[in-house]
View 1 (cartoon, rainbow, N blue to C red):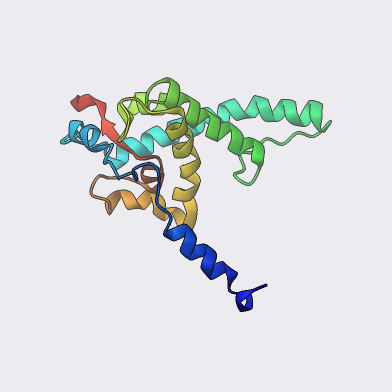
View 2: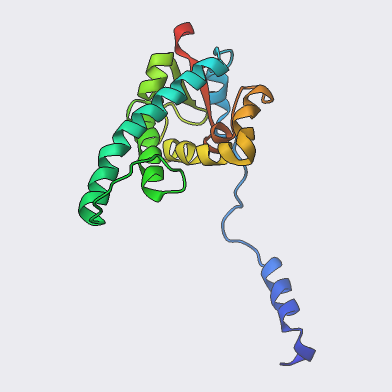
Length: 179
C-alpha cells in the first residue's frame, strides 16, 4: 500500500489515458431503413388486439389443461386433480409464454387469435420477427399486466399504439386487412 492507499487513482488514470490500437466504434442507427419501410402502416385497433388476446388465452388454456392433468396425475400422484389457469403457477406461465412466443415466431407475427382478428406483430428492426423478439414479447405480457394492467392501457397514450410488451420487443401490431 504505497502512496497512502491511492493506487487505484493511478490505475484509473493510466487506463483512461491509454491509446486504443483500433478505431473507436460509433453509433449506427440500424433500424432507420426498416422503420421508414413501415411508415404509414395502419395499426391494429384496441378491439382487434383484445379479441386476439382473448382467443389466444383460451387456446393456451386448452393446451395447458392436458399438460396440467398429466403433471398432477403421474408426477405428483394426486387423486383429486384441480386444473386452473393460475398465473402464479409456473407450469401455466411456461405454456402461455411458449404458446405466444413460438406461434409468433413460426407464423411471422401471428398467433391463431391474431389470425382471426386479422392483425400481425411486425418487428421494427428486422424483416421477420426473431425468436428472441417473440419470446421477449410473450414475457413482456407480464410487464404489461403489472400495476392493474396499465401496460396494456398505454396503447391509448403511445403514438404508435405500443403497449409495454411491444416496446420491450421493439414491435408494433398492424392491421392486415389494410395491407
